[in-house]
Image (tube, rainbow, N blue to C red; front, side, top):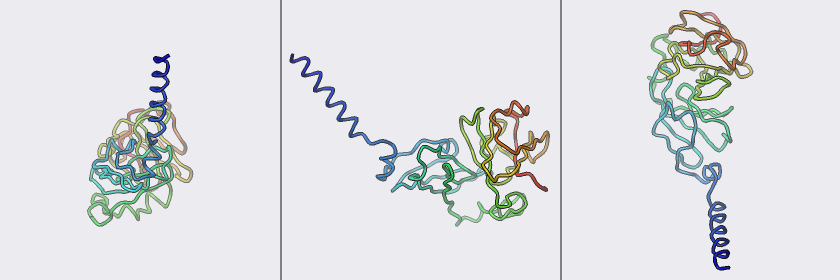
Length: 209
């Protein structure tokens, strides 16, 4: 009898402990200081959370670190990823500290990426994945990437998502939009169908170069 009461008491303590343990969402809503999970951890560093705001140093497509913040209370179950130095999740985009002008200008093309009408035209971006069926590490881009090596995705893409309004994108086997190029206008769950699996080195929105 004593053994049974002891077992019941132990079970009650265990259940009570589980009930008191906060979920990730609850912890975030209370200003949890830990680091939430997400593919952004592959290319971001110095991540911290304060009052629902995730702050990190993330690498842009040129390999430079940018200070970025994201309100993670809006993320729900969406993956938190790095989009050209900016934290994003689902349709929620973070902000980038613009005080350092070296991050805003692409010296190679001599243009401000935020006003590149030639490639962006106000359209949505593209999200690339390491594995087929939109799995594995992901990165999102809104403009041309002449060399995916700086983003850690060179010759490593197996599937692509194009959100509504993204238009068509050109993917090329070599850097600087050279080599074999294919134009895609919709999601591609497996790039083996285009014979481009793990073979993409540069991407850009379709249009005049």
